[in-house]
Image 1 (cartoon, rainbow, N blue to C red):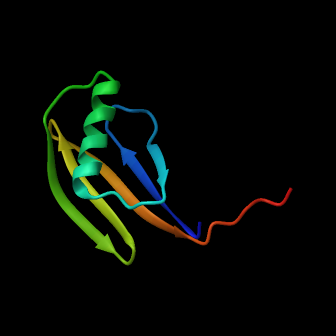
Image 2: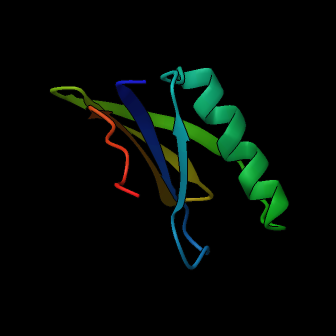
Length: 86
């Protein structure tokens, strides 16, 4: 495995960002589905709406809105995974 995709969910009302590593880059629908799951799992309510997609080099930032508050999902490609020496 040479690269990994790191997806970071920053949701208002949650104390820490949620980070998910994957070998496959998620699309907008997959990101929205996971955001909906995370909101429900944390007993939060409200409508989630997609607002904007920002792309810079190989990184993307999806901006959603949850009841007037901004949720950000950062998708980063991390190259060349290295193993720790034993």
